[in-house]
Amino acid sequence: MDEGFAAALPANAWNWLAVWRRNYLAWKKVAFASILGNLADPMIYFFGLGSGLGIMVGRVEGTSYSAFLAAGMIAASAMTASTFETIYAAFARMRDRRIWEAILYTQLTLGDIILGELAWAATRAFLAGTAITIIAAMLGYAAWPSVLYTLPVIALTGLTFASLAMVVTALAPSYDYFVFYQTLVITPMLFLSGAVFPINQLPGAFQQVTRFLPLAHSIDLIRPAMLGRPVVDVGVHIGALCIYAVVAFFLSSALLRRRLLR
Amino acid sequence: MSKFAMELTGVKKSYGDKIVVDGLSFTVAPGECFGLLGPNGAGKSTIARMVLGMISPDAGKITVLGEPVPSRARWARMRVGVVPQFDNLDLEFTARENLLVFGRYFGKSARELEAVIPSLLEFARLESKANARVAELSGGMKRRLTLARALINDPQLLVLDEPTTGLDPHARHLIWERLRILLARGKTIILTTHFMEEAERLCDRLCVLEHGRNIAEGSPHALIDKHIGCHVIEIFGGNPRELSSLIRPYVQHIEMSGETLYCYAPDPEQVRVQLRERAGLRLLQRPPNLEDVFLRLTGREMEK
Ligand SMILES: Nc1ncnc2c1ncn2[C@@H]1O[C@H](COP(=O)(O)OP(=O)(O)OP(=O)(O)O)[C@@H](O)[C@H]1O
Ligand SMILES: [Mg+2]
Image (cartoon, rainbow over all chains, first blue to last red; front, side):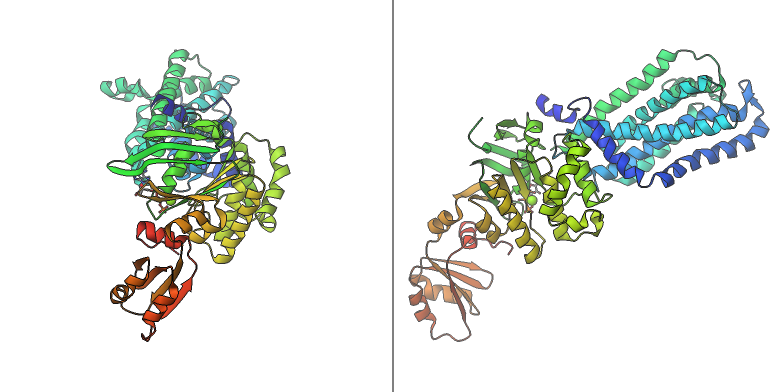
């Protein structure tokens, strides 16, 4: 039993890169459309909410509403980019297109494949989040040079949400189940994590829940960096994101082993 | 190093209550082509997956190229090539890119791979399709590309799960010819198939499976001699039951399959004499083949 679990863990520190490169090569062929698609959604929110609500809301936490919203949109775009990559694209590679199966004929392990997929999803999240950051900066919503701190946080956010989504991918019998994850987890997370309005607007009980949401930790790191303010509890936020990523990675590995290697 | 390329001892595997592989043992010598023959559901693909370490046996021992499997399956797989029962080429890529991407999984650099890909494409007779997307290839071409992919790591052992099922005769002969070249180069092959002809042409030894049990093992000729050993007369066009009671005394054994009677007749003339008066019967006398062995052993017809 124990020796069997080794097959679900990465074999070494670099094998995953071959899987990442496979996905990169496939993505390169459709990169333009893909980047455009990644940008469109958060941009619509950003301009729609920012300009529309911004007029009514006025200033939030001592800054303009658009400046407040920018950090939320960056974190949210990283979250959705890596989530969608993992629940739809990676699921297709695992199940319908049997790409993982072919990889398992080589010296790679299931763990190498999972790690490669997570790294790839984090890369997609990094691209999406960085693109929004650049646009926000061009519009004057980013403080220099602290904006640079957002970049590693975007990548970590992508990795954490990819890992969480991999658990869903491991469990889902079909695509239909992903809608539950989106509507019951991802969308509420957006509203409970302070992406579009400050957490202190929530009822007290919800504010307690918020402390456990990975997106809230991500936003608590990104927003001060965007606004050029001091970050509090850096270690706690990074630690929380890492714990989610690592625990979900091992959980999804165990679940995928049960699903695929039997 | 063990002297076998592959060794299975008492391997068992069940899914729920269903025993799929039941105490199977066999060995494959280096350079040999070993066939696993059996009807649908006999457990052939399950054995192939166990040999690759993708699933663990419930009991028994598997050694592949000297490595215990599944514990060191990854090291064994470095020197194994696989053609699965169902194609799983990467449809997003061209033929060449498929080989490149797959080679990277073995840790090979792009430069090393660029050096071998042209010869692999040539081996698979796909030189002109190097830049065609996989979706544009015919079934036979996909199969050959899968074979080329299995050779990217220059494996010692090839695991081929029904490499020619679903192909037309021309495409099938082309694959057989390629496989014989690989055998001549000293590769070891383990091959599952429903095609008796394929097994007879390619395999040095084979094992007939039923419900995951090894019911006969040996070289094709030895199996034919042992289980049949005389001429076969196929009779169709009459009432099989009635005919069978008529000629039973003159033959060694009769097998009924659908509308056809298979008579194993040491003295075929005697049977012909018995049937001379009958109109509308068609008789075909021929040497025995593996299919007869299979019918004899399992009493069931296989896909032709
Ligand atoms: N993951 C699984 N879960 C449950 N049952 C399985 C699983 N894999 C295989 N089986 C069962 O094991 C039996 C043997 O399957 P296997 O695919 O090994 O047969 P096969 O000899 O390759 O057949 P075919 O000629 O159709 O390819 C079948 O009855 C199949 O339903
Ligand atoms: Mg099969």
